[in-house]
Amino acid sequence: MLDVSVLMDKLEQMSPDEELWIDVRSKSEQEALKVRIWRFLKKWKRQGEIVISLRKDEEGRPCVVLRKCDYGVSLRRADGSKESIDMRTEMLRKRMQADGLSAEEIEATLGEAKE
Image (cartoon, rainbow, N blue to C red; front, top):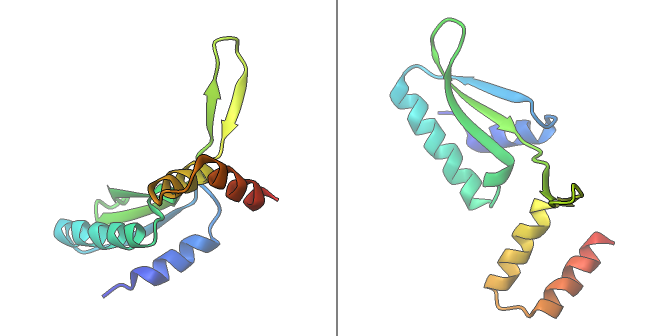
């Protein structure tokens, strides 16, 4: 059986937008592997970094494809200006709010992290 943590180690070494293709024997195995990977990512809070796709290779065999993403998110205003948004920072902010930290504590913590 394929070790998902080994796949994640391989993904760590890859550049953004590179893909890792994993051959499987059947559609049921394809779906089972997708679920195992998704659960691993959820456990380690990494869902936003990896996209999981179910595809077929050139010969029509089922594959699970993992793609490391580096999403660029920006706020575009009516005047045409653009402000980049760091999604990792926003996820941290959301977690700290859920933990009950005050706005001042959150901004202080995020300010220290940027330095």
